Length: 326
Image (cartoon, rainbow, N blue to C red):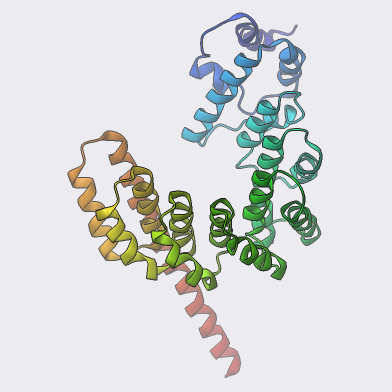
């Protein structure tokens, strides 16, 4: 064994034999892991107890959620075919920020053939990001079509309802007319779970034409439907939802719905929203709530700056058109 592998071998030994969590320093060693070290880890991986694997993957997920400098893509790719479905799912989650189109065939195969519904659902969710990338011309159109067709087939198929609903939510990113038909059909069902997924798909679409479907559901009596509508209103930037959501913050007792409404309002923006959120921030002493409200205000500032930038680009484009016409 080379000297360069000795430090990581200690980490492997701890995974094999230890019971305590790995140190933050040890967890960072999984970031941008080199091939030699990865091979040593994969050689030992089958002998690591399932609970130790889950401990490791959970801690890596927590680290990546809080530190943008770490990247566990190489490790996560290597365990996408693990025999344990939960490991496969955790690997997909670790790859959430990875936009490498080489993952698409792997996810498509999982969506089609994975024996566990939970893993098929995770694959369907991961594919949604690539549909969105396709709309932004970030992947080839041919690849985007393959994904959309697979998701459409899954949503219309005979798989478990949770998998089919996730496929619907992911195809919501698509501008294809077939996607709109699927969403409308799901929204018209009496099943609240399908309505909630349809609302999520509407939010993913970035299409304000869904406004008339979303607004009435902001006060739905079923919390999961209401929550999905609130999220969709934020994603779509519906200014018509602002007053309803501000009133909801005053009247609602469900903390989860309040948090969802705050974040959606940060996406919609407006001076009255800023004043209200700053007021909430001044009144709260809870550290977690303070952090959340600060993030919401930062997100609102980013959203408004982005809107100004897009408006400036639009004005520049109009000036160019006028010059060409002259």
